[in-house]
Image 1 (cartoon, rainbow, N blue to C red):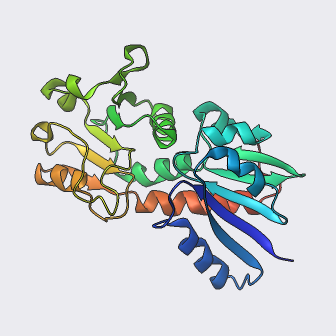
Image 2 (cartoon, helix red, strand yellow; image 1 turned 30 degrees about the vertical axis):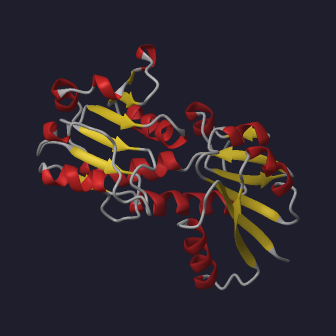
Length: 250
């Protein structure tokens, strides 16, 4: 029997997941496993995909990590708390949503965190940023967001509010936007990089290019930099674990 898996997103030409899982299927001699990229212009078109015969699991990427929630039957505890889903599996003919971004980010940043990283500035407010904020909050790090849409009650700052005090206070800066993603490698978040220093840890969820312009500018200031490749590997492995564990809790 053919077993179908895949990825849902808006633009997937440079996707990590398809190559990763096809190599996994090959290494495990799973010749009957197929991984397909499903590019959707609107999330409502996902309903047709969810009815594909012998479809067992999907990864979800931008910009549908929040809107996919309306098309699943239930959520794991983490996905419910984060309010974002990047992995779904079929259980008893029902679709269950999970969040493996939270796990991937938690595990990948753990070796680099120090007590001085007690405040974080998260660039972006999308599905990935929600998972990052959830992971950091779990370990007691205060979180502030940076977005074009300011919301003081939810700790969302505007770009015009960034100054030396904010940057110096937030020793951890995480880019959760696609700004700088290939092929737009000459783009970067509009930050006052001159205030970033050696005691900063700067993390970019982007993995292509390996060193984004954001990371390059931070490194020039002496900061420790980390890209998102390890996070992607870890969240993909967690998705594989979820797809193959019929006793997974949710």
